[in-house]
Length: 467
Image (cartoon, rainbow, N blue to C red):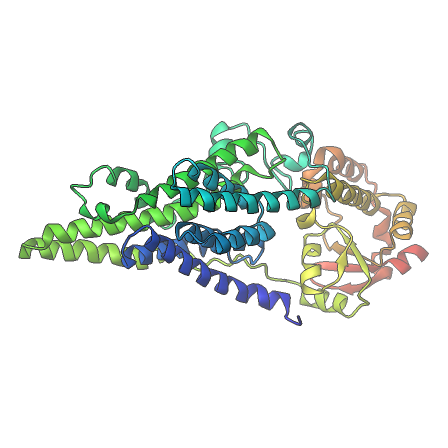
């Protein structure tokens, strides 16, 4: 469409955030709360999603929030067609959450009216179509790695690209960013903790009269939570058939806790106002308390560091990106340097292998990348010049990108690839250094370099083949 992807990635989160806000507010109103509760819930949700990198990433997970809240809104409004469309779009962007929606619809089959059951039946039909469609097309890079296989891969260890397993049960099942039940910062901003008070407040309708205005549909929050936790447990049992367990709960928790906190705060605001309504002294206390809470809501991010948190990666090598951008579009760049991950974005040229792209869950996708990385490491650090020549000739590599300190002993420990495979490859390289054996490629760095920056060297493979 002629839109620069980097520019679009900065505009899209603003649109998705606005849509998220609208549907969060709408869900609150459908639960028969006042607009103030919707405002507080939407504000708290915005604060936490802009303190994390999901929405701002403009990647598929950024669409979870607007699309899932749209599904909930139309489910509560009993609009089967648009509810089904929301499920379909959710499946196009983030299929895991179609399963969460399916869990909610299944639970509501037993608790709703006949009209609700018809709507849930339609929703479940759409969900089944989406899941079957996704399942039929997901085998292109299969098979999915099993838990037993993953335990033999260093990639899933502490220094790996997809660190997952942990001997500490608390971290593994509760706090881990991939296997744990909760997001990394579940109550940021702190007022989100008020969401935990909602089940308790609902037990005392006489003390908190505003509870009488809440719709019985509030049970959807419990059904949502049960669906997410159930899928979290199933994903653990079926590792990694349903991808990462954490993906079913972190987004759900953020939305549920924001909605619950907004409603809890509204209930408390109402109770305080009623308490101080007929007494001037109490009225002053009520104004002070509600004013302080209101200020805390709108300023909840002031003391939590940078807001919004973008997580943008800043390119540090503009000369490098410009050099590759001037080359033909079909060139191939091979590198184990961290800077290689930025080349596709900033230069729009292909890299042969990259750490950020080496995601090990589908073996048909990952194993060829693993073979490439290992072959490149061996060629770069081999004392045999022919190994690099053979790799270049076989794979059609045009340029080799190296860090300036690639051939220092410390680099063996610092480089992400070598640290991940230290026991299988890094240790051998270290042993060669200790014996005083240098990689053959070091003799051609000066003669074959076509670009030198403060941090990097670019070598022409045409030169390396002739050197």
